[in-house]
Figure 1 (cartoon, rainbow, N blue to C red):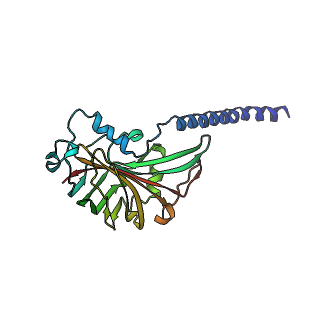
Figure 2: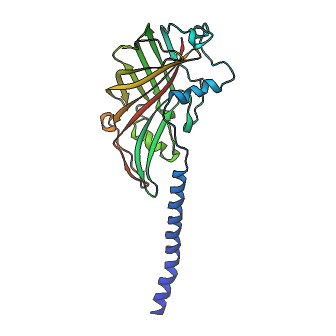
Figure 3: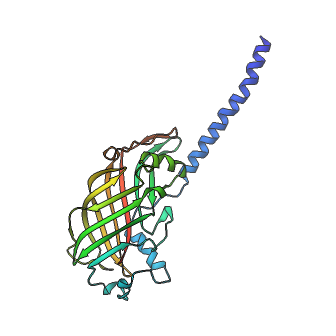
Length: 259
């Protein structure tokens, strides 16, 4: 009996130590999640700081250079292409061009939080005639999408089918009349109806948008709700994730320069 008790006692020590280590690890993970930088939502006011803080002239095309100030852009007619040189892609406080998503989740040892993914790999163009947006195509490279928690990046890309469908697109399907030309002082709001393609699946969506002129560029910010199942995206699972919503928000922050 004593020998058996001794064996149990010896084996119990590493077991207790392992449990203690797991508890410490869990607490550490919880603190790590809670202290990670919170990603700011796409915001015109936030992105405009990129222009205000830049001591050098913002890189714009020759056509946009014809206007010495934003106020002189009385006519924005023409083709405008995505500019990825304005601002910086700091994940927590991006002032540059990006496309991304936000979704609510509950993590073990942490509680409710928000998962965020973003890609700075964006191309596309707008075509404007007077005060009417006649065409728009935006293409996002999901092979370079990253999240606020790098540990989830691979699972996120697998869920989105990035290996088979590396690109997401939005194509405007209805013209939009702004009613007035966007300027540095007058921000315009509008809804953009179009086809969103993710994971090789296309659905009609409506983006709630804002636009403003800044130093010869046009800055556009917008969001639209999405349901993952509509794009055949399976909600990723992980031992650290207690629950993850089956829907989220797509957000875009786009700088355009005259072509």
